[in-house]
Length: 163
Image 1 (spheres, rainbow, N blue to C red):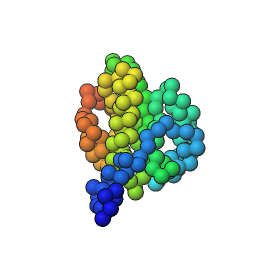
Image 2 (image 1 turned 60 degrees about the horizontal axis):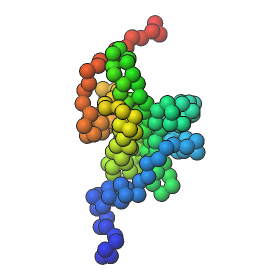
Image 3 (image 1 turned 90 degrees about the horizontal axis):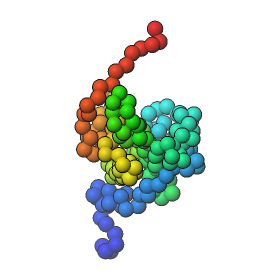
Image 4 (image 1 turned 30 degrees about the vertical axis):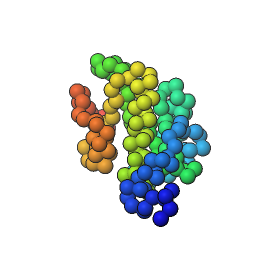
């Protein structure tokens, strides 16, 4: 076996994915792959949503829109912004979208995206990061808990106004 090749094990695949994954700011040309990736994960194509998200956060001024790229293809994304003083909450980072392609799941791509956005938040003086998930979203719940996130001091409330 050559020294520069790792054996084809799950551990070696993770190392290869982590080494070859570039985290960068999203650009307009990424939206096609982001929309496909989101549709793969959610079952819904949301072209208008993603264009609006890019228009709002793609400039880096209102928030952060990052992508993970391997072999010149987008394999993940994360979006977040700083929110402040909603019902007394001091400024904090909010992550409101995260997606990773099935082929690279459990290879460190999501962790690399999350670490990158947390670093961006930290560089702007933010000390806490929050997100909100459906109780039934076990995949993302497990991921965020693996990143050290726990239940916070706020409760989400809602009311149906369609009646």
